[in-house]
Length: 109
Image (cartoon, rainbow, N blue to C red; front, side, top):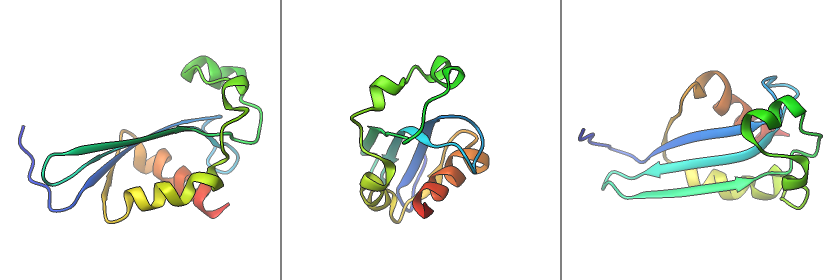
């Protein structure tokens, strides 16, 4: 498939402490950016959610409290990710209902 992009497209995937936009937090963020020339860049980080990761969530994504204990909180990497997606169109699986709203929620905290 050959897609002609006018702007870069940023494809987001999050792993979180749960599915409640108001209460849950990001534990991993990954973004693949595809540029109009076809080149790609990836930004991925484990994030300290500053809360306990429920066993049920850890069973799904495999990220534990031990794995995030020395990771930065989202606020420490927020600007880095904001700059990475600047001027991009946004995409992802189920991202309009959860991933992008949760990411925006994190930017506002």
